[in-house]
Image 1 (cartoon, helix red, strand yellow):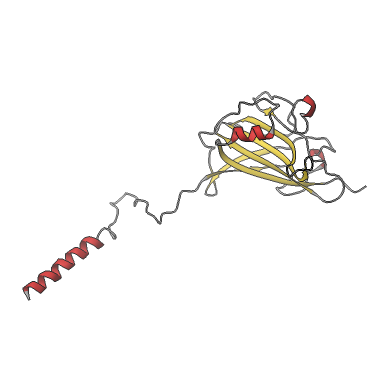
Image 2 (cartoon, rainbow, N blue to C red):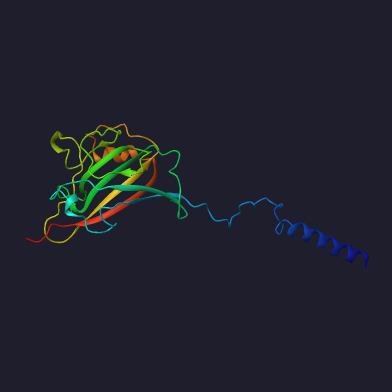
Length: 214
């Protein structure tokens, strides 16, 4: 009987040692350590808004190359878990790539690049309507696009689809932890390559456009 009792007591002690860490509580005032089941922290993400048209809506004639060809305003917004937060500390600049998704270039698979701008200061809260050409006073640089063909200074070039089905246009916004050391004459591929490895946030804003039926 003594041997049996010893075995039972030893087994109970071993079980207690095994179970007790599982149910151990964190000391008062201290958060429990994150385990495998802990939810990951929400990411800080970029989003973009505009008063010119709602995302996915029809782009007004004012912002088309068939109209006043005025660049739209945009606001840059950062959030975490649905709550507004400050931009990341490592943010150095923004870049925009604007393209027509339904137009191919030179019979190829590449869509039509309308406009790019880069080295927008990381401190910017957005862009005002009606940006100028070439290099801007705040250091922003208009890059490759339709306007800078033939050696002309880069500039916004709005949608220009003719009568018929809507063309879908996308503005891609990149938040970068660096500024781009590129000339205004750089190609889209060169611009994207320079951004690779530096993107800390990305957002898109879309719109539709076609000219009225004649």
